[in-house]
Length: 459
Image 1 (tube, rainbow, N blue to C red):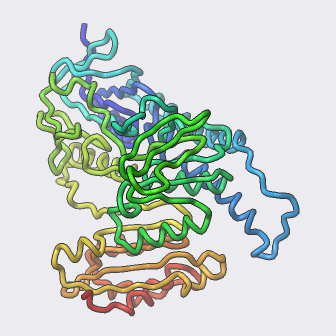
Image 2 (cartoon, one colour):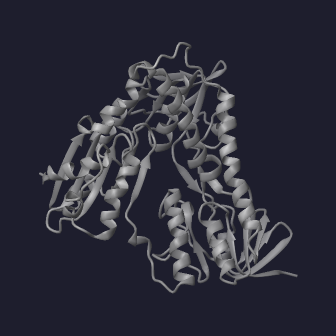
Image 3 (spheres, rainbow, N blue to C red):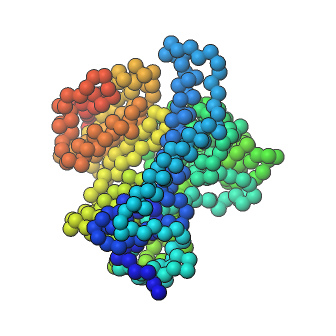
């Protein structure tokens, strides 16, 4: 006999638990299904564990710089990777245990472990169990992409998930992929004490950012001792003794980079290939992402898709916002849309990059009349006090409406300060509102009005 529910949530990542609890609290008999790890990528091998390890790496970095602050550290700084991993595991376990208790203590909510596959638009199979519901919410997330490059199946490699289990220090970590994930791991392991080389096929790092942002980040990381090989062509992998060699060029010397360990950080793919979506009639695009409308409804009435698998955002915060949109529309009678949100994210190197809205390149491509202002972090008192003056701040404003178009803050606390400008963008207020605000001294945010005072026409 089939088990009947009012709603079924597939995937216990960022959006799933909150939505499942909200549905159950609204009186709907709800099931949430997870085939692997409760909490999904963010909790288990993404945001939480990586930022925990980044904190350990920063502690080592500051320890090595202690003399600059007048602090004597007589013994050499040593990193205990097993202890770093134990600390990371403890933080992760705190989150997963909390989620498990939350779901288990919610009346009307059933947690099911197993791999869910559609049998029909209203039926899912999990092992021997057949589950029926009127509404399905797919929150299946994504996984690391493994590129189809020569030799990839002949060498050992890490991805962003498997490297979380490392409890030793790689002698020389070679990272294929010069974008957000790759750069965070590059700085982290360099600060732990590994040699690190980053290989990027494009002409610059993090290609979605403006040129000067990419250049500044490269300069910051190079000064920490990270090596880069850009414009890598003919990329191929091969064993070299107990290590790995990465061919990076067909004609330019040196043609290969050798290292002790390899990390592939070349993007992610959605976990949609084994859900039986064809049996449910759910449409996907050519890359395997589930097609959704502005309210995250799929091509099949009664089925929604949230999080990484819908192609409408690749961050924990966009996934959670998906939950907020769906819950508000279904349970609160609202009409929220994905297009209501402003793109915002951060690159969590040190110093971090906080980003919101459009890049300068996007503003120019759109033909917008705009104003622009930039300021080096050397002008920020907080940065000078902390001895962390790398980076700069940049803001773009619509010349007619005076509304903020985009922000790039590469510098100390940039990932926090960016929200003061993001909130002004959401309010639809002119930049003059924050230009005239009085901020606390000495902080990073107090320089935002000064930055805005320097706006000039974008030419």
